[in-house]
Amino acid sequence: MLDLFDDNPHCCPPMRCLILPLLACSSLLSAQQAPYDVFPPAEPPYYRVRHEASSKPGELAFSANYTVWIPADVKTLRGVILHQHGCGEGSCKSGLTGAFDLHWQALARKHDCALLSPAYEQPDKADCQLWCDPRNGSDKAFQQALADLAGKSRHPELATVPWALWGHSGGGHWAGGMVLLHPGRVAAVWLRSGVPMLEANASRPTIKTHTIPDAALGVPIMCNLGTKEGVSEKEGRFAGVWPATDAVVTAMRAKGALIGLAVDPFTAHECGNQRYFAIPWLDACLTARLPDHAGEPLRPMPTHDAQLAPLLGTAAVPAASFKGDAATSIWLPNEAIAAAWSQYVKDTALVDPTPPPAPTQVRVKDNVLTWEAVADLESGLAGFIIERDGKVLATLPEQGKNPFGRPIFQNLQYSDTPTQPLVEMRYTDTTAEAGKTHTYRVIAVNTVGAKSE
Image (cartoon, rainbow, N blue to C red; front, side, top):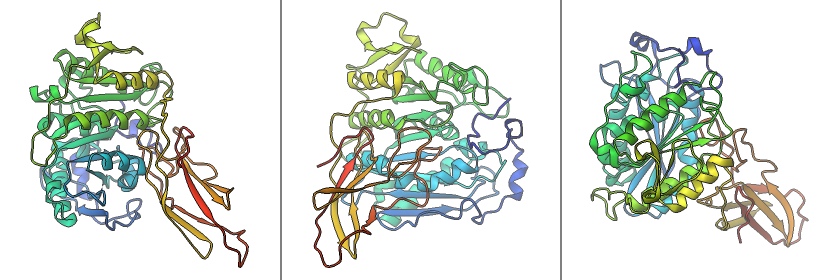
């Protein structure tokens, strides 16, 4: 019996990753220790608060840092986009950079949302359920962090606006649980390789199950996993992800839930290229559901443009034209998203006909160039071309690092967050001629190769 939520690729062997007794918490240290003691500084527009570990029943047993990014020009926030890492030391550490991801910031900026990334300090071999089940204190700590960050950022609405949740593995378990606990607060949720445990998919008695409240049926949900997690490969460490996901999709869809399924045709538990579908999908859901003004309720998800597809199909049709059993189908919000879904489940090569935004604030001092840039909403940011006097001088980086999908400028870790140290928008021209005036240009390139102005 494997722990499906321990997704650190360098974790202990599966049979040693079983749940530990709650008494293990008595030996945990609340002070920051490696690998959680190094993270980017949080200076405006970034803000950070820390939760200290608690030994009280019902409170979060692990220390945690909550880092939020707020668009500089936003006056009133309309929502919070949360990027939740998975279980194990490696994945938990990756949460320290989640709020600094330029691609996810592009989504947040478009909708006047904050981008929040928690980082739970789960010790090696400790029980992930102590945080990935929100009823074990992480729900309370999360909402307290929002309140604290609201004061720190001078955005009081941060404590009350709706949430859009993305979670990987144990983070998917957490995000799905939050939907079932707070359906009226959640605009949409993306569950990568992790789902909440219902009675229908409970695999072991030590994990508490959830029930499905009627209000959760109107929350758009996308379940996303790799084909090697039990779909095409039935054996292996993460082969149980598909049966658990299948049970949740089937149980909720039978009740009429707005739930879909997207199987990555290449990956196992790593995140792959999912962000190129997750971000447009969340964009569509946030466009439809976020209220115009803080304090107003979420709008119902429109259903007149919905499309349906077979559970493991590759093509969708308008809901009115679907000939199969709707109770065993998957739901997609509209035709454009259905087309993106069809491409994703085929080869993940989503198209993007538009160029990325052009860099701004290009400066040069002592032969050092710096600039600012925002990521392309659809395709992110792969890198930059540096021109001097009308000729290409360099590309930055020479080769982006991402062992799990398309190379990107910030590089990517296992749980879909930038690597440390964060890559700077900076280039030193070591071949500039002394005493000569040069003209420089910086061009952004997205992950499908399109260039900015």
